[in-house]
View 1 (spheres, one colour):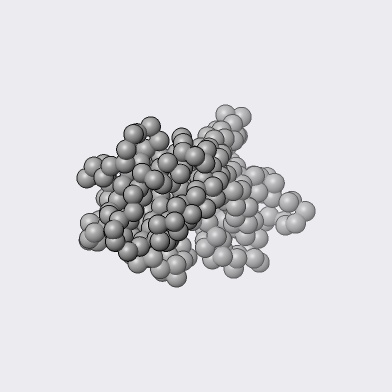
View 2: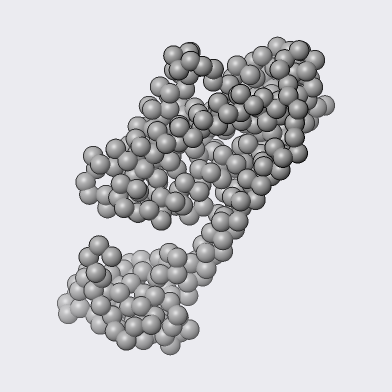
Length: 341
């Protein structure tokens, strides 16, 4: 990395100015951060509710959360404790502000069912290990673009590639809707991206010679401890574990969908009905079916599942004529879901 660029004193000043948000709260860098963050949060929340990809992308370009995250990486490389703490506080408070705005926007939307199942939400509540890999690559590009002023115009593309504000907006919206488990998943996606930016940013800035250049320029550089490096590595490991579990869960759900679909389609075809959708989430298979009266018997599908090695799979059947029926794997009969359950 050091052979690809030569860091000068001017570069150090530019990098520090780009990522460190200085006090007081009325300073130029601080007001820019908070104003842009609030506006990006409103845009992202509105885009998620409206299921508008273009609007969400607009929020990702405006959002300034990547600035203090890269500030953490730079502070780690320089062992600059004051800026490390200040950047960390900005990330934490900024995340809470985005969640709060998402929650408030959710209060204006009625009912929540209009958006909790749309593509913007669905794409941010099932983080997988591949998301960490993508975040690591994106964080590397972001840090490299920060070091190289001649490719700094790549930063808007990095902002689009790595998702920071939208997952937090989804968290706020889902908390307002009472979907706490899904809100935790979207928060995990945010933490994944934060961990990746800090880890790759620390690595790239270190290899680029930022620390030695700062020392040569007479800037404040502290002593880097092994504990700090271990903390960065540990952060990645902690995030990777639930992501790996999520990847396994998603793979299992995809297998369930593939197995259950032909069983459900044959069951519906025999009754003159049609299956419109088969999905699986966390081991629960949901079958949507429509057809003419009289309503089809849901327990016959439960029997068909049991005959096709799906006896341990919980089933939810949504019928256009007949309503929703739950057919748990360990139950003797199907029943209507409990309201609010």
